[in-house]
Amino acid sequence: MEIVVVGHLSRDLIITPETTREVLGGGTAYAMLAMNLEAFGAGIISCIGTDFEEDYVQTLQESGLDIDGLHYRGRKSTRFVNEYDEKGVRTQRLEARAPPLKPDDMKSKYLGASIYHFCPLTAEEIPLSMIGTAKSSGGLISLDAQGYLRAVEGEEVVERDWPNRDEVVSLTDVLKLDGSELELAVDAKSELSAATELLALGPRMVVVTRDKRGSTIYTRNIQVDIPLVLANAQVDSTGCGDSYTIGFLLEYMRTGDVRRAGLFGATCSSFNVETVGPYNPPSREQVLRRMKPYAQA
Image 1 (tube, rainbow, N blue to C red):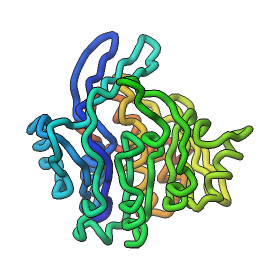
Image 2: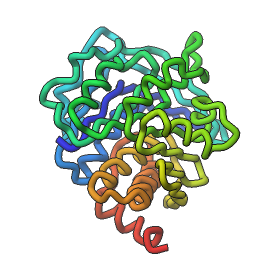
Image 3: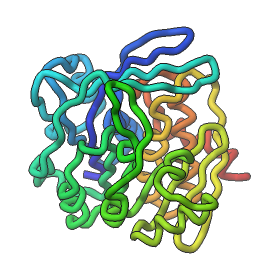
Image 4: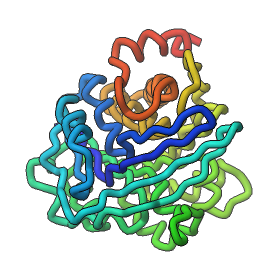
C-alpha cells in the first residue's frame, strides 16, 4: 500500500452566504484523491458513529480506498459546523466528537506502507504510540498540525498552544501547517526562524501553506517557494490543505523533487477549491496539464 491516511472523518456542515450543505469531511476523506492520482493502494484509519451516513461509506469504498480501518464506535461521529462570511473568514463549531482511535487500530495490513499521513481534527484523537508504530515500520511520516493547535470551548473551536509539540514533531518527516498555525506552534521573529526551529526537532521538511500567497517548503538545506496555482472557480476552500498534502506526498515519493511535488500539491488544491467537499477529485492527467505552465516558469 502506498499511503495510509489516519484521522477522524467528519460530517461537515458548510454554511456560506450562498449555500448551506452537509458534506463528508475531515482530512481522511481526501484520501480519495490518492486513488485518482494513481496511488498504488490507499487506506484510511478512522472512527465514526452509527449516525454516519451510509452514502458516505459507499462513496469512500467506491473511490477504491481500503476502508478496513474504518471503525464504528458509539452513536456520534465527529461533526463540525464551518461558517464562512462574505470575505471567506471561517468560524467553527464542534457539535459532536467520535471516540479517539486506539493503538491497535493500526492493523498489520497497513504496516509497510510508503507514506503515513496523520491529520487529526482534535488533539486527543490519535494516540502518540500509533505514530510511533508507523514510524518504526519505515514509512514516510507526515503530520498536519491543525488538530493539535485548536481546542473546543463549549462548542466553539478556538486556538491553543501545543503542549507536547516537541514529542510529536520528533516523530515526523513532513510537518504541514498554515501560516497562522506556524505562529501558534513557534514563537519566532520570522517564518524562516520558526521553520528552522521545527526542523531542528527532527522533520525533513516543514510545509507552510497560505490562502492566496502560495506556499513554502523548508528543508534543512533549501527554501522552496511555490506559487498559487489558479483555479477556474472559487467555491469552497475547505480541504484545500488536505488536497495539497496528499498530492505533495505522493509526488515527492515518486520523484524526490521538492519543487515539483509542491507544484503538484498546489495544483491539487486548485481543483479542490472549485467544488464543495472531497468529491470528484482530479485525475493525475488533469493535475499535470494544469501544472505544466507553472513547472516551466
